[in-house]
Length: 292
Ligand code: C2E
Ligand code: MG
Ligand code: MG
Ligand code: MG
Image (cartoon, rainbow, N blue to C red):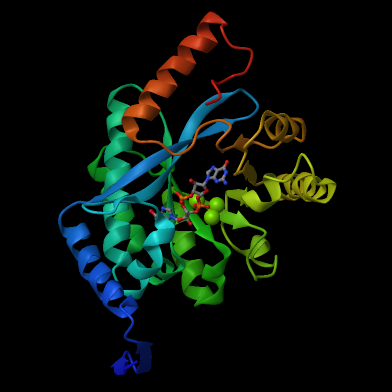
C-alpha cells in the first residue's frame, strides 16, 4: 500500500491511499458546491414551555440535501465543514435561512424565537454581533427572537474574545444558551462570569432519567442550579411522557425532544403547530401537544 505525504497548514498529513482519502477530497469539493448551490436546509424542532404547554420557540438544525446520498445529518459533514474552513460561510447561510423563516412566521402572525447553533470557531469573529444585528434588522425582526446555542468548548479558546463577543450580542438583546450542558471539560466558573440566559442540559442526562435515579438527581439539581443563577432551564432529549412529566414536576422551564416532535421541515412543523392549536382549543387532548 502506498502512503502519500502532503503538507497542509504546517501539519504533515499521512494517509493510506485506500480510497478513504479520495472520498474525503470528493466530499470536500461537494461541500463547496453544496454551499454555492443551496443544498443546505434547516429542520426545526419545537421547544415547549412546560409551565403553559405552548411552543414559543424552535431550534434550527442544519441538513444537507446531497444530490446522490440523500439527506445528510450534521454528524456526517460538520467536522468536514470545520476542517475545510467553510464554517463561517455555513453559519452565514444558516443565520439567513433561520431569520428568513422567522420573518415569514412573523408575517403569518406566529411569534416564534429561533435558536441557531454556533460552533466554537465562530466565537472568535468580532464582526459577528454587527452582522447579526444587520441581518435581524433587515428582516424587521427584533434581536430577542434569536437564541444562540454555544457549547462549553468555546471556553477552551480565546476566552476574553469570546466574552467580548457574547457581551456585545447580549447587549443587542440576542439570547445566549449553553448547549449540551454537563458534557464539556470546562469548570463551572464561566456561569459566574459570562452573559448567559439559558442552560440546555444534555440529552445524555435527560434520556435515562426514568430508569436511572442518579441521572434524575442530576437533572433535578441542574434545574435548581439554573434557577438560582436566574437562568432558564431547557431539557433536550425528552423521549417519553415520563421524562416530560418529571421535568415539569421539577420546574424545568422548557422541553425539547422526540416525545414532542423530532426536528422536521417547515411545512411539517407548520402543520403540527396548527393541529396542536386545534387540539388544545377543542379540548381534544389531555396533553398540551400531540405526541408523534
Ligand atoms: P444539538 O444542538 O445538541 O441538537 C440536538 C440534537 O439532538 C439534534 O441532532 C436533534 O435531532 C437531536 N435530538 C432532538 N431531540 C432528541 C431526542 O429526544 N432524542 C435524541 N436521541 N436526540 C434528539 P442533529 O440535528 O443531528 O444535530 C446534531 C448536532 O449538530 C447539534 O446538536 C449541533 O451541535 C450540531 N448542529 C446542528 N445544526 C447546526 C448548525 O446549523 N450549526 C452548527 N455549528 N452546528 C449545528
Ligand atoms: Mg443545539
Ligand atoms: Mg444539545
Ligand atoms: Mg448535541
